[in-house]
Amino acid sequence: MTANHPALSWIHGLHFNNLRGDLYGGLVAAVVALPLALAFGVTSGLGAIAGLYGAIFVGFFAALFGGTPAQASGPTGPMTVVMAGIILKFSDEPALAFTAVILGGGFQMLFGLLGFGRYITLVPYPVISGFMSGIGGIILILQVAPFLGLEAEHKVVANLMAMPEYLASFSLPAVLIGSLTLGIVYLTPASIGKRLPPVLLALIVGTVVANYFFPSLPLIGEVPAGFPVPIWPTMHTNALLLMVESALVLALLGTIDSLLTSLVCDNMTRTQHDSNRELIGQGIGNMVAGFFGGIPGAGATMRSVANIRTGGRTPLSGMFMAVVLLGTLLGLGPLAEKIPLAVLAGLLIKVGFDIIDWRMLKHLVQAPRTEVLVMVVVLLVTVLVDLITAVGIGVVLASVMFVKRMADLELDSLKIITGSDPEAPLSLEEQRILERNKDRLVMIHVNGPMSFGSAKDMVRRLESLKGFKTFSSVVLDLTSVPTIDGTAALAIEDMLVMVKSHHQHLFFVGMRPAVARILTGLGVLDQVQPGHRYAIRLDALRHAAHVSGSTHPFDVPPTEVAS
Image (tube, rainbow, N blue to C red):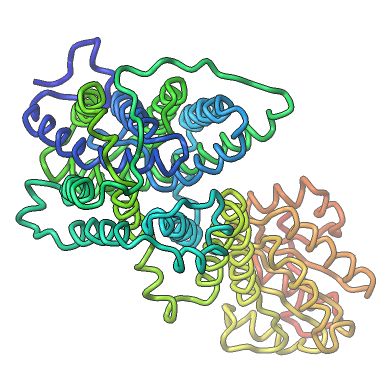
């Protein structure tokens, strides 16, 4: 049975042919999501209940309105790290932080409506790698104190500076419980893990053991039961800029986080997600979460994989996950109050290690130096400064390095030919003309695009040619140039000015329509002498040789000039 009813047809990928698999997949995803949602809520600074609210609302509405049918959404490590920073900024009035969450969801919806989803793939991999590894590092740093039974500082740098103090005053019971949690998560046999997710098993065992043997360990504390009360957005003009900045960080990070998980889901289900629709769904989910005091979320890889592996294929699975979590909230809230912080720290340490891009780190020695530099810079800025600055620096640095590589390739494609050159892409007759006029005629052949990265260096390379001023004619062959930008066009104008200052003749050959439009639009071709534009290179060379003083019978200008 498919979703052919008009009331359901708008739900992307919905059908009822896999109802059993979707219900079981949603149940397993909820089991995986529960301990992590509680842990993320505590880490954010808003309490465990905020993590559960985020898992319920983001999970339900992102599945309902999103574009990745089998994706399970909710609070994630990266989003929690950002939210913790936002809470710190608005500690005097937390309602402003939730307004930023709502705005962030609105920005995500706008990204989807404007079709920005397809552009996320343009973010260079070293930037994403450094960013994710930095977030993993932040989670690990922030969990050291609770793992040791101590209270963590709010800022990453402060926690790093306090490490000696933490190690000198740790609580042995907390370390034992945290280690037990980590051991269960990592060492649970696959046969057991298929039936009971290791994170849930670790949560249950760690909580029971801690409450029985170490009842004095710090606990989550009060977890309100019942449905959340809506929060009305608060806005202050003096905090508007800071709120918009925070919202944009949430939107950009949520977009990247969700769409990367969407790609994982595509690979597992052999389907194709709708990236722009996914952003709209994630935006709606985050807006609703903000209205009800939940932390923001995104597509979550761990619970999405658990959902798919156990049969989830349609949005029903993500929606059912949220319903199960809501039922847990309404009935089991008081039990969650007994969970020790050391247990949650153990679970989050596992999350932090999983977020780190070990694949890239393992190949640092063999990887290109420029990509390693970008990754390391982004990682360090993410940990020591902030996330949006890290992404901005990473994208700019990667772009500059890319432009440099392209400029080098463009310069390699520039060939200055005087006399015969067996490697030049010329006919035998063209070679003979250049050989006969090697002291009077020079040809510049460009094979590939011309852009701002190489434009000025091309002019300098021509200026530095030994004896350039002694040549009478210069032939600029643009036959193999598919595109040109404004900077390169103005560089050609500089060539014209330079040639005129030396009283030389400049001939243009083979401009494609796109190239001619740019040069015409910037007025470059207005400076070319009449009769000095050719469609055929041989004709241009003959004319150039003739005006350079050649008396050879074959070095005569063509009877017709192609303008």
